[in-house]
Length: 93
Length: 493
Image 1 (tube, one colour):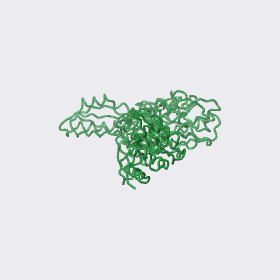
Image 2: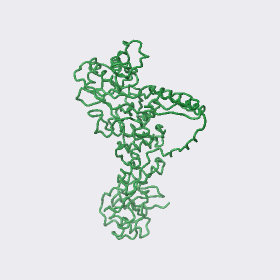
Image 3: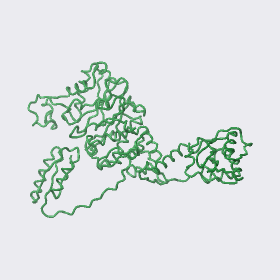
């Protein structure tokens, strides 16, 4: 019996992942956004990060998402992009 | 245009074997008679040799003419006038064959044939051939647009689908065009219609993509409208599917189906409705989760950061009981028109049993249910989690006989799930979890478990025997998280 190929239909949206190049390493002092995603004790972690960054001469912008369960709203993302050179945002838990 | 006789035959039909020499002789004599075979070249040549025909009949390519004139049986002799059918005989009927031939000015030598003999099923009536033709037509007409993936003849299709990362860890049904097209028969919607944009990568879930994933889930084709409505609901912004996929909490979408269509597709609202054994229940929830995986891109241990997860994340779906319900169905309570079938989606953890075998009055039963509802997440977590309470028939009877409607039960449960602040504040009972002491001005003040009475959703389902209900704890709820979403399936039928 001949072995026939089986045709199936692609269940994905058929989009290639948009590969973005990594940004160049930062030199010198920078303005860095710290995003509080609103999980308990996230502020403790970010306070410590801010202290360490300030020691190295970086300016820090603190901002937060309205809720940890949803992606940051577009205007929050746009503001960070406009005002800061880099962002530190970490997953919770 | 001239009149002509066109005959459709196939190689493995003894009735075709009887008529073919008659047609062959007429054609050899110059009569306007064309014979087309539904079989392949080798089979057709074999038949011609076996019968000693002077011509090997040409093939009906792609069964184009067979589809166009769509006979039930072959041999089918058609009288065509410039392609327009003027008459036909399927099988053998000497009188009618002679009459049809006479209309074309042809004489057929019919004496050796039986007076009447029914034909054999046209190849287009073979279910596999019909499905394949329908699939090819769908592709040709642009109703199927998804990229075809070829699985080699030496590959096991089930293994190939695992290897391509398209399954949830269980085998999936290979989504052949034939199966997908058959499922699409169960919606009036265009396969290109967009059902929703699926997080986390915002994949576009068209009707076609949902059908492909529903086929993979093993869904009965008629369940498609329910899966479509579930995907629509999951993509509503208030459902917060992005966060639900990404959360460390063991929550996933639970689908409650209320209304007559649940019965039409054989869903189980009775015994073991939250368990194994019912195809529609298991595959509707699974189909939704495969859409989340394959269209949205949410994969366990990648975008899905669940610490433990739970088996309901493979798929969680059940139907509500209609008979003996103490109140209107959940979908109707949430705005779906009477008589319509609706789906309600809620972000939940796994269900758990609540036992009360002694309560015979609604107050007592609510007290027992409330104790169990307190334990969602932990009793010290307040206001952040909703619950879906699945009231079983033996518990439901208590409410029905007492005349308690949905709102009354919700209000009572809400009232009974208040605790004194001193017991739920951080540090109380030795547990550091709990209400921030900044909000506790008086340890005697009551603190609600749920943000509102209606945040305790009530569904009615289960087997006849057993004084049990089930509770699904929610996930971070309301505006800060995921709110339940209800949609009618009618727009997707």
